[in-house]
Length: 202
Ligand SMILES: [Cu+2]
View (tube, rainbow, N blue to C red):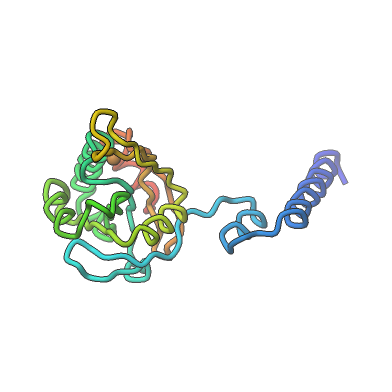
């Protein structure tokens, strides 16, 4: 056995031990957490059950066999959402037929204000292929949690009846099996966005 193999084996042993330690000391509270601990790989995404902009009930399973390009936001968002969705739409245009299997999906973090009707009129400004999903507070919270999306309601200082929502701005390209293929930051430019998708599809 050469030295590198030896070090490799020792390291593997240490890592395996550490992994078991985590499992022993912290009982996983969910399958996702369990997978994360066993594989050491963060699991992003998962089942959801929501309502689209036409009022139709949809689940993640409806998109199996296609790629979901998932983004979380809200229609009253002043910056991240409109800018990100604009870039995403342009990137899909750029990809042309190559992106035919991609379904862009906006999931609202503001189900209180974002009704299916409001979402329907909002997404008209972007890719005609974009669909938008809303749901109950708890369905939205569970979906955001599965995607590890941070979001927080921020009341308006001047007018407490108004609020904005701070939120993380990643697009998640999910594979035909529903598993994460590539995260794409909302700050990516059109060229790079299209390239990232193109790479992920090959
Ligand atoms: Cu936003």
